[in-house]
Structure formats: structure tokens, C-alpha cells
Length: 338
Image 1 (cartoon, helix red, strand yellow):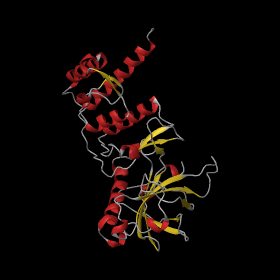
Image 2 (tube, helix red, strand yellow):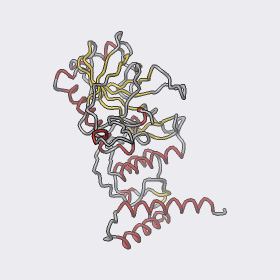
Image 3 (spheres, helix red, strand yellow):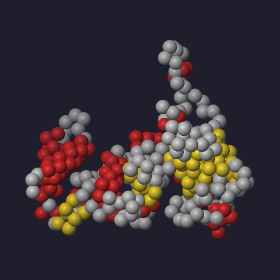
Image 4 (cartoon, one colour):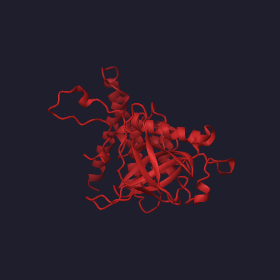
């Protein structure tokens, strides 16, 4: 597997070696990448910033080229303006500058150019205020990608390539988070909006909750910026975890999915409810008349009553069983003769 596909700060041992040092972590060498920033004449050398206990994917050892930046969602910002980000009160923004970026050399196997998303804080040398705050958020999010989101990298969330820094003539001290390109904003009734796509987003958010991750910004209008569709892979992605909660105990009694009713009290989670409403997953049938919901609650209670107190039992176990029952039930309904 190439270095682009796995974190690599460890020596690969020779199978015949008995030297215990052969499997110890390397002291991280100075790693640099050259980035050609749109609107800046000179190329800029960025150095990798190690974070204790964290390993990241390696970007290709190639010139990286950016497009003009945006503030995550807005139109491109002119060079004279974005280079003043954080330098004074007139150009003080509360979010990082975002650059679409690609490697200069195409992948020889696919002929495609590897794409990235760069999130930058400029003028961090001031040591306080918005630049330092945003830089701190970038570093904290990078750490969280390893400590809490590692299992989701490359699928639900983009791969993270770590934090990179540079001393520049155009933006002072710059802190940059480098991530895999994750897709385009998902638009309801847009080109990629299908029933299956909405269901996939619901399953993604539910999966994050299952592992104790609450995004924290899946509210209007932020949800339209943070839910992305990866056109190449045909999968949903979620980005920007700077306000996430990572030991979240979701108190739901039903999974987030489509229902003929709107069982909001049974979902019992404001984030699941908001996402469900945004994706228009709920119907108008009274909850007490929704036979599927009522039976799903019985399945959950029955399993909990039978297994509560047993060694190794968890609430998530019963919720997974309930979700599996719902899936089978719906398949049986669909396959039943009309």
C-alpha cells in the first residue's frame, strides 16, 4: 500500500530482523511540501508540524497547486483581500481560508490528479485574537481526526494529512490543515439528491452517534456547508468537526431513517431530529398509529429485558438489533405481493 493510503511514521521491519528497534516509531524527520498558492508569485515551502501521539497520511511528494481561496462556502476572494486575513480588524474572519488544491503530477495508474482541501490561518505570529484561535482549532481538529475519527477517515470523513506551517512574505506565519478533497455541498433537489443519497447521509450521522461523535454544527445553514457529496465515489461525507462532542451518549430509542410518522420524541436527540427534518425523512402519520414504529419499540424493549444485566451487554447492541429488524421488515414489505 502506498504512503498516500496509510499513515506512515513507522519503520517497516525486515521479517528476518530480530532488532527490537526495527518496530519502534521513527523520530519524525523534517518533512516539507512545496505549494503554489493562487495569486502568489513565489512557491511556498510548508513544513509538517508533528502532534504528539498522532500519525497522518502522507501527501504525495509533489508540487501542490491551489485555486483562489474561499471562506468554506463563499465565492473566491481576491488575493489583495485574503492575504490580509487576520492582519487587522477590517479583514478579521472567524473561519479558516479554504483552498481547493491538487498535485501537479497525475497518478500514473489512473491518470487523475490527487485533490486536497487546505484550511489556513494567516498572521498567526500576532499570538492572539482570531488568527491564533483559528490556528488552535485547526490543530485540535487534526488531533481529533486521529483520536476519535480514525475509523471514519476515507469514508464518512476525509483523510487527514496533518498540520503544516510556513513563514511567508504574503501571510506572515501560516498554519495549514491538509485534508483529502471530500466533495461538493449536497443540495436538496440538486443534481445528486436521490432517496438513496438522503438515506446514506442519515446512516452516516447515525454511525457517528453510535461511536459517540456528535458533530455539533448540523443546523441550518451550517448543515448545507458541512454535508458533502463525493461524486467520484458516490458517497456522503461530513466535514468540520471543530465543535464536535466526542464522548456523546445518544439517547435515541429509534434509528435515524425514514418513517411514515415523525417520531421526534423517540429519536430523543436534537441533532438526529434536525438532520431528519432537513433530509425530509418524516411523514405525517400519528406516531401512535405507525405500526412499524410501535413494533420496533417492542423489539427493542424485548431484547433489552432479556439481556440487560448480562456481561458485555450494551444499549448499542439492542439498538443495532432493532435497526436490523427494521431493515428486514421493510424488505419483507417490499417483496410482499400487492
